[in-house]
Length: 112
Length: 114
Image (cartoon, rainbow over the protein chains, first blue to last red):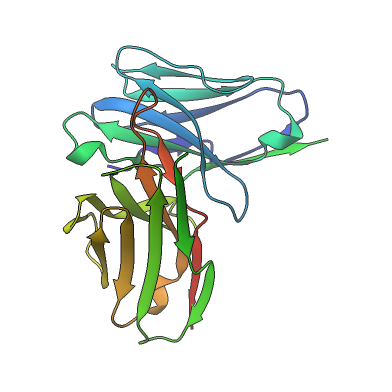
């Protein structure tokens, strides 16, 4: 049931772009994206609902393909502050109480 | 405003000892509450969730238990810790209103079992 994220890790230079993918084997109601800095709690970035998408944060956007049960997070012109581990969380159609099941995360490192 | 607090922030416990982690939420009523555990290489694993006082559901079998004695209080416990219980424990609640669905996480409790 756990969504699969790729890549596991990515290293960027400031100003470069990156894409993080999230895929599920189950039909999804929504996809959430969170970022976690080392030693801190995850912070909400955005949620994408079935039938639409929501851009939530600076130069970070995302898409949600319901048919393919996939979501992608796009980081444009990366900044040092973008470093951290990104998690996608999925809510299954008909799932228990709309609980979020998270992927293993993608570690993003932005270098000067 | 809605806030969430959990404690202790850090603890080191011997194998076989008991555990109690507490979490409280302020600024909202009847929230959905969650306990997640983060271990190396496994991401965020959902352990328990609660939709109301005394209502606890477990997502994975383990030697941990959870309780919700009050509307905005969530407790994670163990009678006897195992080495495999080490990890970063996160309490979270779900918001209501225009951004319904967003999870707010507490600061986390880092548990080391020796």
